[in-house]
Amino acid sequence: SEELDHERQRAREELQRKLEDERSERLRAETERLGALQRRLGAHEELTTRRLDELRGRQDDSQAVHRQEVEARLVALGDEMRRSLETSTRERKEAEALTRAEVSRVDGVCARLGADLEDA
Image (tube, rainbow, N blue to C red; front, side):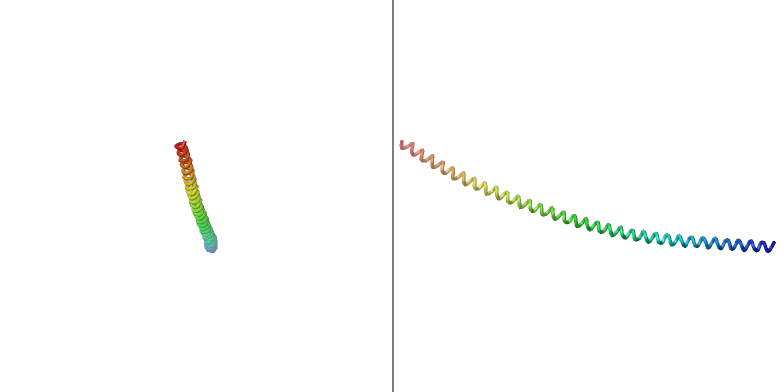
């Protein structure tokens, strides 16, 4: 009986040791799995951050190009308005000169008619 108790105790200790070994192995495997997962998440975060930085760069470039296009269009519109104003001013001056010439001609005709009427 004492031998049987001793064998049971030894079997329990062996079983306890195997359970602890198995638990240690599971913890080690879980630690490795979590470490690998953490590395993968870190790599994914780094990739995502790089892509966001690239996207921000492209957006900044796109905004700069758009700003330049808008500024160029505004300059072109300003030039167009200036040319239009210059053309209108020139046409108005030409019309005034033609009107003055016509008024002078009519004044001359009226003066001749007035003189002809006086002579008659």
